[in-house]
Image 1 (cartoon, helix red, strand yellow):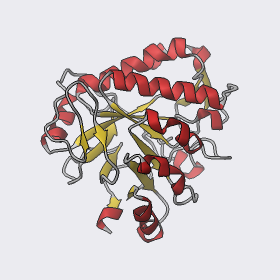
Image 2 (image 1 turned 180 degrees about the vertical axis):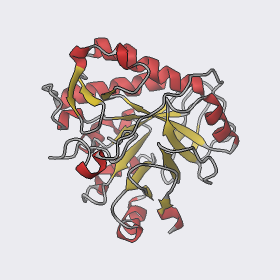
Image 3 (image 1 turned 90 degrees about the vertical axis):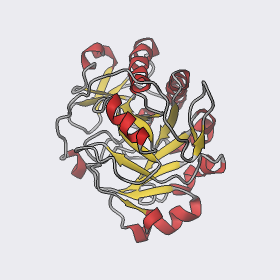
Image 4 (image 1 turned 30 degrees about the vertical axis):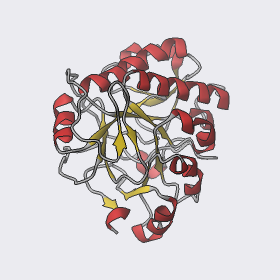
Length: 287
């Protein structure tokens, strides 16, 4: 679980919330405007899409993940992952003009008090804090409440012209949320988010949630993973690579020479980033 402000609580076995060091890096976020824009990106870098279908990226694509600071659109990679609220249709169109596919970062498993729709979430679905300032886990069992709220968010991504969604905080059942969430609850909710994304013509990625990859790989078009090399878990992403779906992977604490060789063997698309996820990046593709 990444969020905009620093290292994500990966929801890995025994780890809840984000790391303590990164939790100190919280900052205020500005909500971007929504705007209408036709979803007609020019090229199909590393994937395919036919009329009326969503983008289907292939394994091995290099990427840029930027969730803070002024957006730098000049990184020469086929895929960008940026905040869906903070950027409008103009930013997405500019990236398309540069030949990029663009992923819309959203939090779908946690409430954020700085988002423009924060007041639409009733208190009953808000659980414990997830380690980030202003964020609380959501009761994902309450799809009667959450489905229409998440559909509005995903529809916003589609209106702005994004090609895909990165739904964050999708492993609450492995964390202390304040709700008795089960693995079955998580599978049901994650598949709901995938279905909504596809209905809006968007590809969708599975964020972390390593234990459920075998069950969820068919429902998702790519994966986003944090720190699997640091925790010795990268091989667990293999079902995506075997299906020729990319695994967009980032490390924060390990140097490139500690993980790029393994990432290359596994077929991951790996970066070294700072916890604030600004513009700076170091890619295994360039190492």
